[in-house]
Image (tube, rainbow, N blue to C red):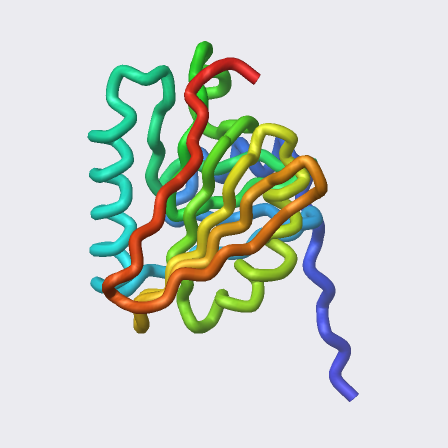
Length: 173
């Protein structure tokens, strides 16, 4: 029988040092590193179009839009969303943020379950988060999880003729 070597956990400080020097991005989940894979052209088109639309719409509002190269700190984890929006009165740490109000993930077949499950739950633990959006890249489908007074509600938009809006608040909390 072959014994499998167990992977060593890494501390938050070691992760942040390692990540700044690394040529590839890694998420830190429960102390373990997970290398980030590349995206398809369709994935990038969707994420870039959404980033451009949000940036133009929110210009001058006090909100800032970030792409997939900036991570979000959730508990002891660090995650890279495809894009996010935050109300930015202060810059905070230059390499990660802790206070997104909107997070958008473009679903990839290999990460779809994670984005809908554990990653969604981690993001929803952030008190500033108001909306978590999942965009399917192979069919016209969008899921929006919105924070309400009673918890989280899910809305689904299907088809190319659907119109959706985000409820981004660019004012203090």
